[in-house]
Image 1: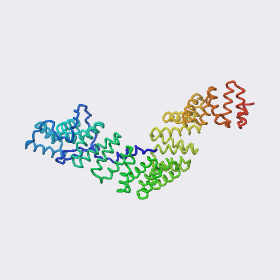
Image 2: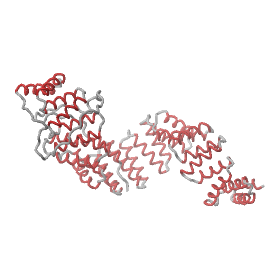
Image 3: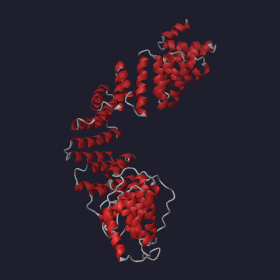
Image 4: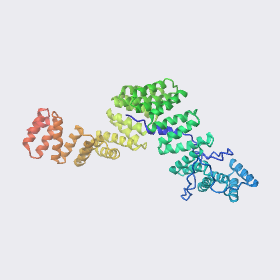
Amino acid sequence: MTQPNPKVLLSLLLAAAPVASAQTLLDTSAALFVQNTLNQMPPPAVPRVPGVPAVPTPADPTAPAKPAVPVTPFTPAQLATLGQAQSALRAGKFGQARPLFERLISQNYAQPEPHFGLGLTLFAQGDLKGAAFEFTQLTALAPERYEGPYNLGVIATREGRHADALKFYAEAATLARGKADAAPQRQVLEALAAEQTRAGDFAGLSATLAEAVALDPNDVEAGFRLAQARTLAGQGALALPGAYAVLQRQPGHVDAALLVADIYVAQGLGSRAVRELDAVVGRIKDGADRARLLLRKADILASTGDLRGAVLAAQEATRADPRNAPAFARLAELRVMRGDRTGALAAYQGAVLLAPRSASYRAGLAAVRLSLGQTAGAARDAASALRLTPDAATLARAQFVQGVAAYRQGQYGPARAALRSSAARVPNAETYLWLGLSAYALKDYAGAATALGESVKLDPTPTARQNLASSLLAAARYPEAEAVLRGLVSERPKDPEAWYLLGLAQRAQTREADARLSLKTAANLGSSKAQGALK
């Protein structure tokens, strides 16, 4: 059963997550917020300091909250100072706010609010070590408040301590549940969801997003992300109602349509997935969106063996979005699979025209040219791909084309070098076959036998085995050559070349009677070389 592509779904989840998922919360009693998000602020200059005190485990949230130490009420003067400090913080005057909060802490340490304000101030100033200390004190002094662990989670995220961040956000969500207003609860849940997505905890993510949706049932994107998370958690059937609900509210929601299709594919219902995509394509006007749906349809049809339908869907995608280079490249790949190399050439040319800096498309074009016998053009395109800093797989493909083209042009040394580099990056039976042929042409028979032996291990085709036998004969490894050839003539008794080579191997071992019998068989099958060897 085909599974949905987790990379695609995960990238959509990350893209759908609000950018302010790690916003810093302020005192809920004053409804004060500082918009310092992880995405908006530059990386912190302060390195991670391991000496930050550990956060105590919060008490049972259902039990009455008890402060860790007795709290002395603020005096009127202290309340006035607190108001001044919070106003300075609200105005972004962190240099004024910091000494005011520090003065309050020295006067009335057990009050949690100055620690909270100072933590936010230091965070805004980039002093993560100091901020973490103050938020830890807030957690100790007011263990019932979610702001302490939440903001410790923000700092952990900033420092790349994602396991710690996940723990802090989970604590904050537990403390905020049913106590904070819906908006701060959503903020905490979004931060938790971001870390769960990063960790690949899709079961936990599903629970978190379900809680977020319950807080705001009209949030279509949250509902979509919940359906994604459930799909990634292996609960595709459970995700379907949510995905359909998104489509009912937003009939043109392309990602939801793709998710529905993925879920049906995972259930082995490819034709149902195609029908669902067709239904949405019919109501989408944007060409780029139509192309996305059509390309997914092409992939599904190809996976079911309907290559003709896949090609037609990919063609329609290129018409829907004529500037979509990946659509042309996918059309080319599908045409190659159907054996339509001329059509594939035209499609790859379209992809390269639209994305001339794509090494992958240029290498694909080179491979098709090579298959059409356009050796010089294939070599040029392969060289172009190599100049475009390709990834490892594309690099290996371009080097393969370069090597085969060089071999066909009689440039055996460059051919061997290119094919050797290609095989080192991506071991492939065909690459080793051509590497062996190149080594043989250079009279490096031992190297040829080694390369052809690797080719046979990866894919024991008759061509690879016959060439291996020839190399073994040239390297005077006659018993090994005979063993390979006996297997060949057993499987292909009407192969004159295999019988001829078998006769040579036997003759080299001074077994003339066996050799003449094999050579006569080859001659009777039409081998002129065998006839000459019998004279």
